[in-house]
Image 1 (cartoon, rainbow, N blue to C red):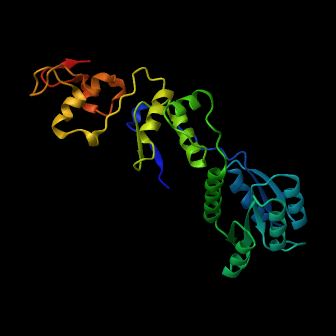
Image 2 (image 1 turned 180 degrees about the vertical axis):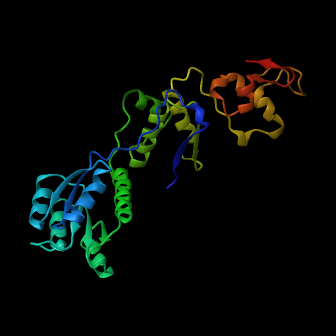
Image 3 (image 1 turned 135 degrees about the vertical axis):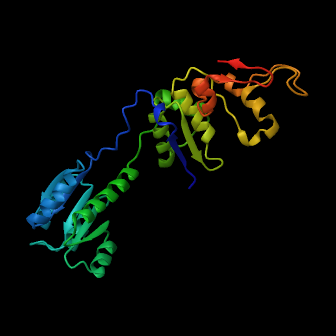
Amino acid sequence: MAALSFKPIDGGSARQHAGASHSSASNFRALVVSDDPLAGETLGRALQRRDLTIDRASTGAAAIESVLRTRTDLVFLDAHLPDISGMSVLEQILKIDSRTDVVLLAADGSAASAVEAIRKGAHDCLARPFSFAELNEKIDNWLTEAHSRRPLPSPTGEALVAFRSSGIVGESAAMLRVFTKARSIAPHFQTLLITGETGTGKESISHAVHTLSKATGRFVTCNCAAIVETLFESELFGHVRGAFTGAIQDKAGLVEEAPLTYVRCWIFAWRRNVYEAMGCVCYS
């Protein structure tokens, strides 16, 4: 799928921006099911470091009761429990709520156990004994997937008007992620690089970002690929009448039309605060 990506240009271009924060995992709930105190403590500490809400169970029956009582996002399930086999508990949990991701802790670590667990619906398997690095990797990978699956809020109010006025429509998860990203960065960055394949809507998104940014200057576009090489200077910096054959009147360039504050991609013009139209020198 074609995608758009955003990248702030020039580290000093943020306006009153305290820094991007990572998505919080505090709304996720995990259940640790094991009668091994050491394994349970290790799992609990790793999950707590990522701000997950943690429930604990030492038997299969207690695990099933916990899932029945509370919506659970992630379960670390010991394959060997004192009352019910881990595979049976896995099946019961998924019958209660198929959205729950279960990571089976397999004592033997055999490929056969992993294949059986996956076939029964387990999200992943982790062989015991496991290292802290392996456990952290499993949790981090799950968090990345879980955040990507969560529905994002649709744009509303001023943001919705900005997107619609720019010709942008869509309600898919991918488009909602684009809307959310554009809305969050627009107030903070003056200079932004938007990349994407042809037809993905880079100009439309940039127009929406400009509208949401509260910029005072008008939105000016420049299709560099369409400018004839010999007229490039004229398009960007303008010209005066008589500067070249066919220049029958003065013409303002794009740099003049868009205030220099908003065309910082022309770094040399921005730094010197001066640009030269063909035939004369003009100062901003």
